[in-house]
Image 1: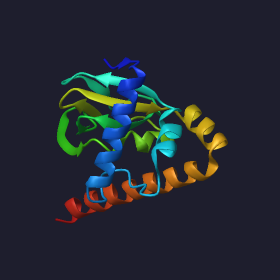
Image 2: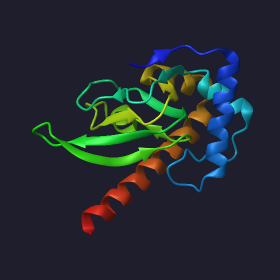
Image 3: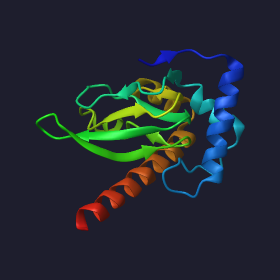
Length: 167
């Protein structure tokens, strides 16, 4: 079960780790916002709640109605899909530091389409739709840039899924 609250020092370290992962990795699974500096990231993560997830614990469970968007600050999680009869279909993705998960339910409001388990000890920044609305109200330009970057990740993931289906 995720736990909340980390110190301000840990918060700054987590932001630095997230930014480093975003800038060092090739654009793809990471959140790509190259024009953002420390101030922009602090504004974003100021509208989130930091959670720790121990290795082996679930962050997201398929079928849940939660709409929270998660930014992976530290660690990595695996995403697993289930068939309609509840059987595990297997790992469909690995979400590294610098990326996001939970974006489908965040955007469409439907139940979680899969489950996400921490591979190692993780820290995530949780953003509910209500917290996103506050971020959007206070910084509309940053909110627009964030949505565009999230759309990019969704498009990359969809192309990857399409490629697997066609094979």
